[in-house]
Length: 231
Image (cartoon, rainbow, N blue to C red; front, side, top):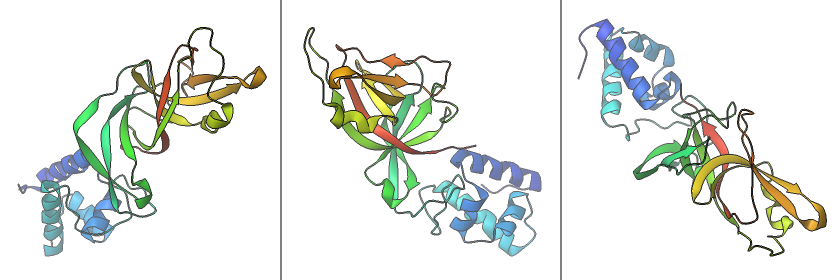
């Protein structure tokens, strides 16, 4: 619904920009309009036909947020992606704090990604154990993994060979331990005789690391390779 006064226009457009996490840069590219002209509209100036047309285009895009009026390699948050061409599913939340089950979306939403993001998925970070690199609310892009470090029977010898897991050292991963999911940095600590210890390490020093016990099974489900931060 169109607003009636400049103040109402400013408030309405600010709500839309905040709701959909649109940057001025991205919106100008989508509408194929000059950014300075768009800025005037966002300030409530509807003095010309062009400005009024832009205002109506924004309302149209907000009413149909999956619509794309233009083609752009600019992400809605204002960052530049290498290319575009895929919608990446946001599968739910992942805790970056104490272990807890991640919330899963029954009907996942999608955000625009590059062709290189195909076959990947996105999770929303909850908690602060991975701050300051990852903040609560960040969207993390994950490359799916299916790596299992199985539990060992009491007294059993042998592990998955270190050569098969050492590449995970230093990777920020989505993991599941004892049926609970978390987002942590994986560290592989070599020991004598070709053995090793596995640690799940928070970036935030206020939290302690978790060292995998022989009787625990660890599943690594995704490797985080980039993030999107809104606001």
